[in-house]
Amino acid sequence: MDLYEVNFQSVVSPYRGELIIPFREVTVRKLQKLPREVKIEGEIKCYRLREFVATALGEAIFFARLGTMDRERGTLPVDALITFTFILLEMKEEDFFRRFTSEEFVIDQSFLDLATNSGIRLAQFEEFDHFLVQRVKEQDVPRVIKGHYHYLKKPIFFRVR
Image 1 (cartoon, rainbow, N blue to C red):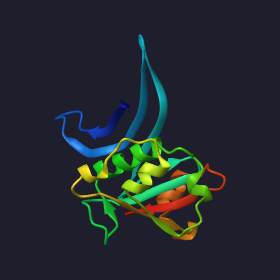
Image 2 (image 1 turned 120 degrees about the vertical axis):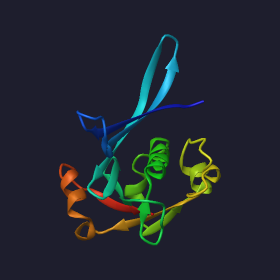
Image 3 (image 1 turned 90 degrees about the vertical axis):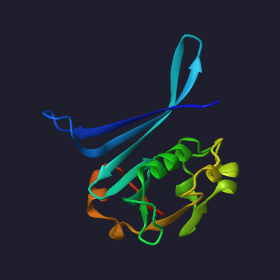
Image 4 (image 1 turned 90 degrees about the horizontal axis):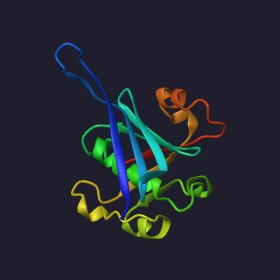
């Protein structure tokens, strides 16, 4: 059984302990439990960038507008993004998205069975049993996302719905 560690970084008022920003960064780590130690096998960070959330796997950057689950508006809740991050951690080939030439594709249970080592069952989630991933041209990517990942040499961008 795979173990994961999920850490949220939030902004809290120092005087009353009020939650100002529910999350600023989420770190998801895949762990392997060994005798007397725990080894980190993989790690992905998700960032809140104004009204967007973004994560990267190699040179592939995935982003969505933060909000309640609404495929028409293209918004995803935080738990959907974390589930998507679990999927990215389990990819058999990290450069899969760079080699993929289609403009859009669906990540559903059959995709998980073929392209990942994941034991995740998307049917267990009521709101999101699949993700629609669309390739986006760099000029159509929100400036805040391009600015955050400015250090990547040849990024490719995907909108997740």
